[in-house]
Image 1 (cartoon, rainbow, N blue to C red):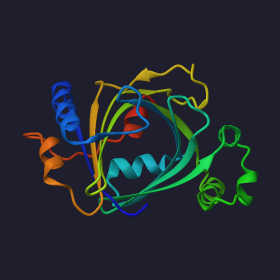
Image 2: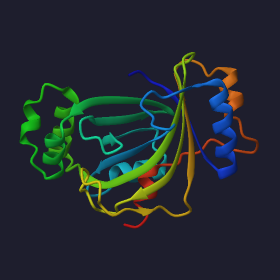
Image 3: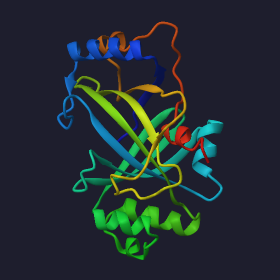
Length: 223
């Protein structure tokens, strides 16, 4: 996946209602959504010194983070993802994982990764060995996704953000989670070369500035 533009706004509940209605009128629904939404669970990685967290908070222009993610607690589709930022543009690399492989990573059983046929898995292995990158915390939230073909646009409304604190029992759907402070709602807009005017107008909000909200950082607030 190539470099993409990305906007993030923290919005109000009334903003969510307005944008939801506008997007339903102009954009398509994500084929994977159930009743318009799905639950995302991610397990984020960081070093003992919290390198990824500190770079995000400090606004470092070039940075990366690793996570394992699945949807609606469906263990048949799990992905390792690497998100990179380059001066405001984003890029995401992905590799498939089985439930068994995911659990082995969580348990620290990682030597098998060295021989993986997937480069991203080998890269994670190298960084777990060289920088002591390790599973850090679970992040859960609900997402309402919309797509628009022109510009390869994806608009998402994320809310009910919860953390399992330092628990890394990623595949356990019954793990206890708690809400992050202030119950934020996040609007994300991602696109390739251009953002069509119809989408720009649909997500437009008066007196809102693009932010740098991080769900991972929000879920580390209790550490």
